[in-house]
Length: 91
Image 1: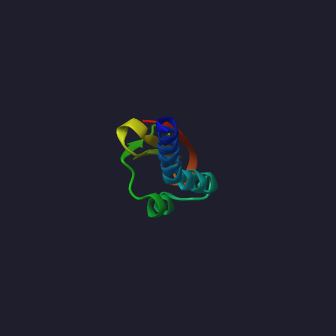
Image 2: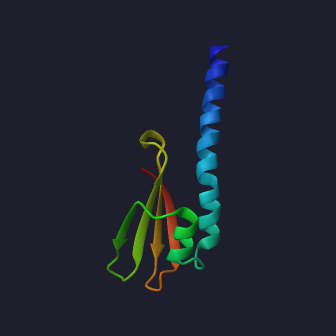
C-alpha cells in the first residue's frame, strides 16, 4: 500500500509540474518567428533575467518552479525584438 501511495504522489507531482510548463512550451513553439518581446511579456510576464547579445539581440531567461524542480526557458530575440529561438533546460 505504501508503494502505491508513493507512486500516486509522484505521478501527481509530475502532472502538476507538467501542467505548469506544458502551456508555455506550446506557446513558445507557436511564437517563434512571430511574437515580439511585448507579445511574450504579455503572455509570460517579465523575464527573470535579460542579457544584451553582442550580435544585437537580447536573451531573456524565465525560471519556473521551486529549485529542486526548476525549469528554465531561454528566449533569444533579434534586433527587431522578434523571438527567433528558445530552449528549455533545468535550472
